Image (tube, rainbow, N blue to C red; front, side):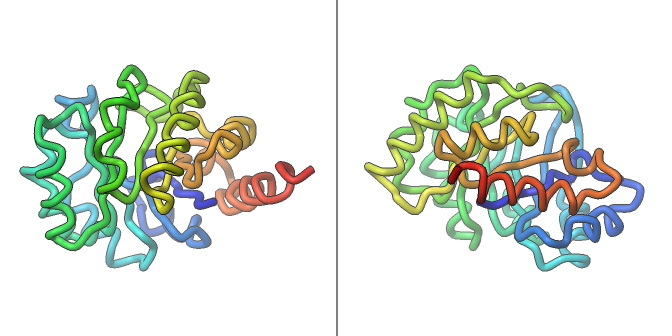
Length: 219
């Protein structure tokens, strides 16, 4: 299980300090919002480039933007290792997948809470990860939507059939309780923002999640 702290909930006045708080994790999750596809604006490639200077962690960049093909090259050039785009933003998913691959990054597709898993079925064999939004994208600190668990289970079945190396990422409302539910449903990457960065000891929160996921499910 990979825990990916979301810098959406970090201290943007001192990102280097925030990264140091979570340096035990393999991944950092970077939410990019354009104020159009989602009702918020966050960061661009310049910030990703700045992050890259301070860490060798995997930068898992989630493009919540209307025209991913137009901007993804800049994010990869800035240091993003993995690029996830939303299926709702393009009529040519295969072209976007190819463009990401051709520029040297791993590929992910994300679906919003109201989007059916059927919309991504044909692309499961072509990608590295699926990101299930378990809240409405745009803002951190929201409550987990329980119906996301059925989507995780559906994607897990597709993984068995079409792509056993596929990572199932869940983003939104992750805490001690929901992390266990997502793991049981088949997820293997959890994005957590406010739960981690809202603590006085972010690394302790990370260690607690890992312990819970490793041991409690075996009881």
